Amino acid sequence: MGLKDRLALVTGASRGIGAATAKLLAEAGAKVIVNYNQNKEAADIVVENILSNDGKAVAIQADVRDKTQVDAMVKVAVDEFGPIDILVLNAGMKVPYNLFVDLTWDDFETKVMGEMQCFFYPLKAVIPSMIENKNGDIIGISSGLSRRPGPNFSAHTTAKSAVDGLMKSLALELGPHNIRVNTIAPGFTLTDATSWMPKDRVETIAKMTPLRRVGMPEDIASAIVAILSDQFGFMTGAYIPVSGGSLMI
Ligand SMILES: NC(=O)c1ccc[n+]([C@@H]2O[C@H](COP(=O)([O-])OP(=O)(O)OC[C@H]3O[C@@H](n4cnc5c(N)ncnc54)[C@H](OP(=O)(O)O)[C@@H]3O)[C@@H](O)[C@H]2O)c1
Image (cartoon, rainbow, N blue to C red; front, side, top):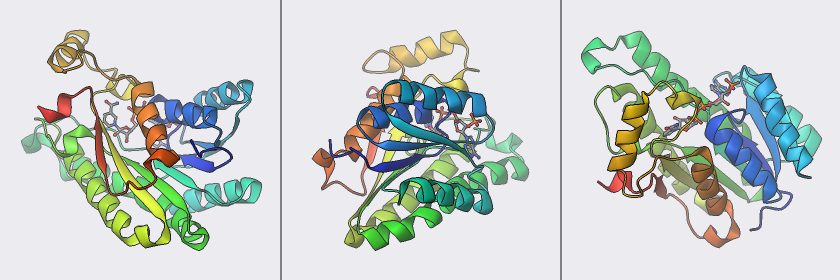
């Protein structure tokens, strides 16, 4: 796949889609930085899982909304392993579930600006060395809700639409430096973030999905790893729904 010994930083890799992505990247031969914010135990389990399968990984704590913490994480990673080749921007803010009329500016600002910080600081920390090395891959994790909004998700849709715009702008600016930038848009995926959803609603979503099931973290992770492979070497600026078909209807 061309991933052997490339160094990947996956933000928010202690749980959910990020954890599945870190494990699959390691299986494909990449060295993985498993970033987490609060849950060291979960991050350590991801790393142990990778190491026990003869992969290479290390867990590094950083709240990716904080420039100082991100810069410190990247410095530790680079000092230990060398420059970062792959950046998977997976960490995002909690999703406020409220009609717009009930949404406060604080909720909206926390979500939208927090999501931007989760992308901005890791990008700022990693892009210069990618440009210097004329090599890099960036994946931004958006959401199907960026293009297909639903009631109560206005803050999330706004934040993820901004992610889409940023990824497209970067694909344009970084293409000449041989850096690919693509966006993955998961549909509903079973993770801690969606565990609040009542079972009957999950079943309804599955019934309305052409493939008749909801996503698992591994479904999203395998699409991410595929796109990072050499087979997709001429693809940049793409927005790829991974949703069992739910995002076309
Ligand atoms: N699940 C879905 O249905 C779905 C659908 C579309 C898009 N997405 C997107 O997919 C991404 C991952 O979602 P998920 O469902 O896998 O979430 P999740 O299971 O709740 O996991 C969130 C992960 O992000 C980390 N994280 C949160 N804030 C962070 C911060 N400020 N700095 C560093 N790490 C942070 C958490 O670390 P700790 O363990 O340390 O807290 C955890 O590893 C998000 O961008 C989300 O918007 C999810």
